[in-house]
Length: 519
Image 1 (cartoon, rainbow, N blue to C red):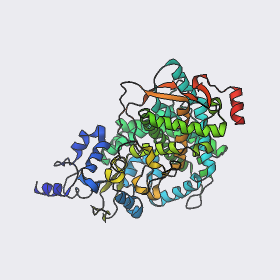
Image 2: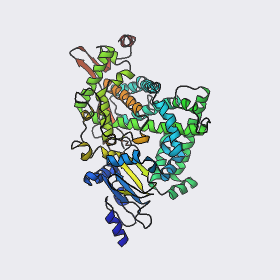
Image 3: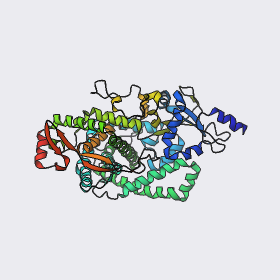
Image 4: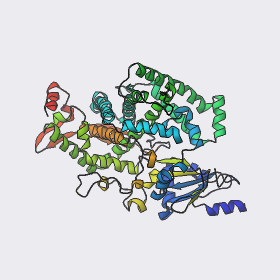
């Protein structure tokens, strides 16, 4: 008890208990984990860092049992950039995700990660890839999303917008990755074995993080519970990806997998099918959830802020007047093109503000290789863990000011309001990570989100279903636990200088298409 008393005196986080550490408090707040962590960090004042223990046992407590939680920008910079090599993902995280992601870019460190990073970086900086993303996304919007929303608008039925967005971004990232659109976003919202298996495999993999490695490894050996479901799901996923890669080998295209097929590994050899399979899965996992989750929180926020919605619609229509002419019928034929999307400054600011308050990945974990001292003086021993709370960064008055919890897109604009300005301190906004692991798909994500957001706002007005409770789901990405159920209403475009027009009356007729083409 004396030893435990001495240990607890050195810790600065939530209350710790003998044997169980801070786990009882964590379990009691599991339904609001990110807000609970944020509350704990705010309680530290300007320090924005605390240390707690999840295994208060001799010889373990100050190493494997110690967790340092921080959202201090200088600590984040230290971990993500300055001492990057000292803070890898670590063996526990890699082991848990190995069956699903293998040695892919999001589950590797060192030379394995660096090779894939360099190869992917060459492709993600090309204009052709951004154009391909716009093409896949716009096709799904034009041919399927608009139709589904119109059907729900016509019959007055509510729809789960988060589900639609997940399907749309999944179809888009699959098309971009291996040139195959699974068309999960279709009228009737059909069942798709691949997506169901992919979801089940991801869910089962996440459960591994809740238990000691020995426990889930034993379950895996016996194919029990979630491990049995994981095994069956991976068989379905592997079959689908294997078939897609085999098809691409016969008919190469401009998708990501076709591009990786032309590359060589560190030994000068072509990537094997198994490596290509893991590369594909890593990109699908990253590209599907993050954009759709961010858009869900964006639309939820906009529905509660009619002033922001009005300004967004005004900006979109102002751009379309210049590019397609004053007739609203010409605006609604096609989703906005690449160059039109680049001019939507306020929309990008609103999306960045959404990610500041509701980052798609709310927290991440790093393993400490060697003893170190963070810039704020916190000592972190080798073998311990650092948890950096991306969710909390945007909610600290010491970082973003007294209005930090208010939705204010204007904070991302220049004084004139005509130019997007990123955060002056890169590590005040880490929704796209930071340092060498900064998200390669950042520009693609903004492009896709702007395309979908503008397409929906231009045609539809969304209303939250009365009584629907929006709350966070505790997972690696900030899903809405109960989805986002909305009613779809028509958007009327009226003004002094144009004919009053409702989206109910606009369709892709030959005349409208000709008008848009002429514009």
